[in-house]
Length: 300
Image (cartoon, rainbow, N blue to C red; front, side, top):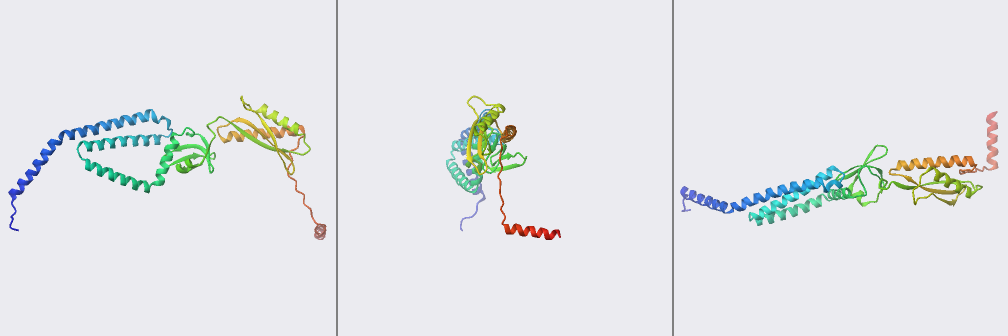
């Protein structure tokens, strides 16, 4: 309490503090300049690397949005590396440690909060690099089918044949199996039918094999396969398998349509019957007699 405030002493201490800061700045000036140089260098390195990714490495990714996201992630990662190196050059190791610790905690919290979103994002990256699925491919899953319209970091969009769009989260799509009809240009399809029990089975086999072979082109190593499959209630059933050009389901429908018309017309020409199920209904004599009496009364 005996100490009295001295304006001159305060000014003197302030100048001493500023003088110390000035000395520290002068001593740290080379490091400060070097830190700026490092940041600028890493910035241009990041830009160059992003350009290389977009021009060469990302050509395998069909979706433009994912190309941009991957390029931005690479750019930010390299810039952050330059920032941490700059802090180290300035001797701010404690600050660097605090920043890394805070980033780790923040990253863990974000990861737990956005677990589903990150799963979809990772799935989108996986789909973008897969050779087995591309834009405009016709694919079929257990729940939907259609042409691949878009692959984003969140979902995959399918355009169905009725021109409706279905959106599937990437995580669910990656975890389940799917059929891609556009990978192979050739596929085998099957047509089933039945003939009456009094038909000549060898004649049926020869006729069906011949008309399929004559009307559908088969390449080397491909052939028409014919098998009788079962004795049904009213028919002997068979299946015929043959190869067609198919990169979408509509081609399979068209091939079966053509094959069924050919089989039916040739069976009609040869007198071969394709039976249909017959049901015999039996009525008791008493009920039949009552129905007749009722009808006679109504006629009177």
